[in-house]
Length: 77
Image (cartoon, rainbow, N blue to C red):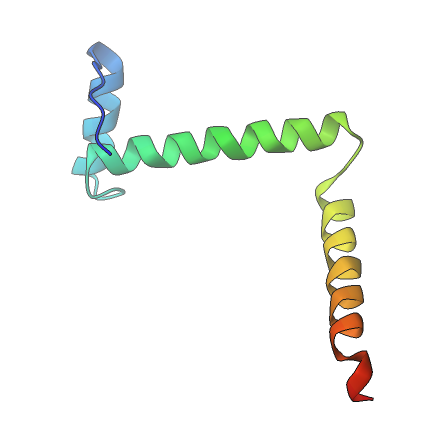
């Protein structure tokens, strides 16, 4: 899906500089990266508001994965 966004002044210069330096292939890529970073930041803030740190999340993910694996393969033992 394509959208059109009007960008002027310093923002446009910033986008162009990222492309000219070779950091990104296009202005669209810069914008997609910025949106992804914004989503990541918002999710981190939501987790933090619930008292979940990145370390806690990683530990929880490992525990859940271990439980799923054990449950799935328990009949093989």
